[in-house]
Length: 57
Image (cartoon, rainbow, N blue to C red; front, side):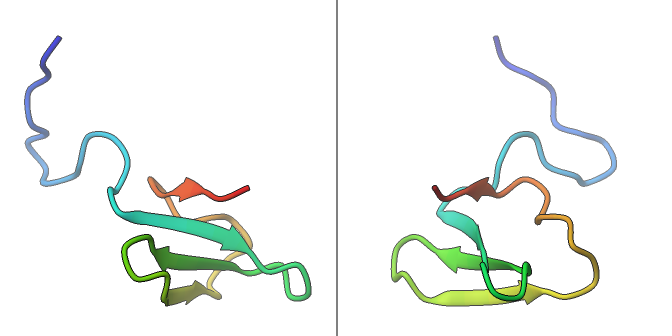
């Protein structure tokens, strides 16, 4: 079933073509581009993972 777009500009569902992995030494979450495999960003503001981005195993 289709859904209506959010009125506040937020998104429905996960961000495509990105994934995240947790660094085992520091515990910080790192965002990765799945097309190139390059790391994009590290979340240092909190120990919680990025919202809406799938996790790698």
